Length: 239
Ligand code: FPP
Image (cartoon, rainbow, N blue to C red; front, side, top):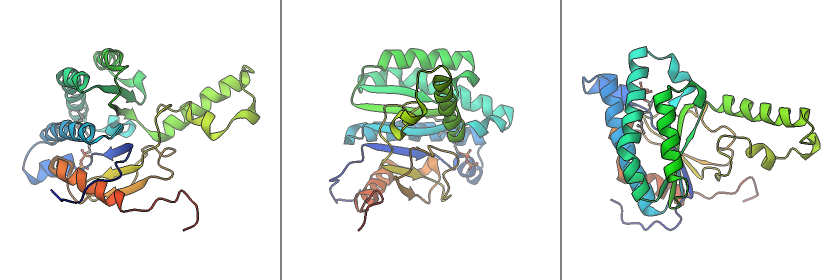
């Protein structure tokens, strides 16, 4: 672990946990074993983030596009999410963590949806960290969902088109109320956003890590935070 102190902890870190499949292939394991190992890593990173004072952590656990994967992999990922929620609920609550799921909930199997709602209800007043789990999430779909909700309000004369600001728009996203991410980490060496938080990442610092997600450690997380700390954020203003 590096000894440089962390002076500026990002308030919100978003992560694309990529490379489970490639890691598994490298180890001659099944893709599902890669995801299993990935969920163990996610657990460690949630704990680390809460411990160092990150207030929001958003994990991309299942994208809208992931529904198109082999049905065996899809059901395996759903089972993993279910186990994660069942096994972690006590720990999350004990750590004063609040769970919020972002994504197209209607597409989730009822068993998962019920569980998500139970954990969200149980943890809704927790304050130390908010864990936003992106499940069945796609950013374009989220933006369309917001646009539709706003259009309905305009149609019903509950909203004046001239009153639509960035702030109003944000309030209709799944992430309403959460600050934008300060830092996005993507593992596996790929340098893409992949339909993740397109609106919210407008000014986010991007850090790409050349390791598969199952190999990602709390130390790698701290190193990404140090990289962030050394970046100068100007939000479009002059140097
Ligand atoms: C990308 O790896 C990862 C996913 C599609 C899902 C991420 C899921 C987990 C880490 C496990 C479930 C998470 C929790 C918190 C329970 P990939 O399959 O696209 O890898 P590849 O690009 O190497 O094929």
